[in-house]
Length: 64
Image (cartoon, rainbow, N blue to C red; front, side, top):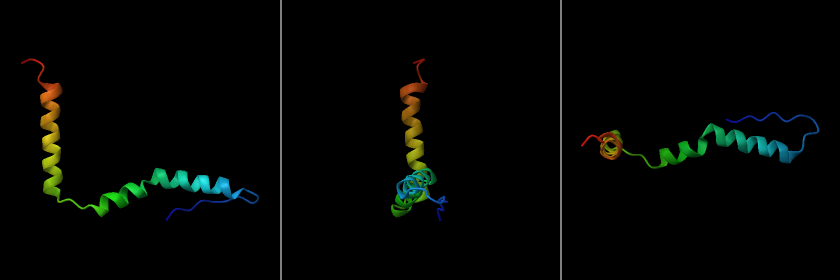
C-alpha cells in the first residue's frame, strides 16, 4: 500500500503528483501486467537462451 503524507495547507494537486510518482517508482503496474500473463518458467528460460544465442551471433563472434 502506498502512503503519501500530506502537509497542512498543501495543494491536492501536489499530493496527487507525489502519489503518481511513488506509484510509478514502485512498479505496481508492471507487476500487475507481468502477473496477468503468466508464462511457465521453462518458456521464460527458453526465451533467455534464444536471446543469448542471438546476441552471441550478432556481437560475440567477430573473429569468424
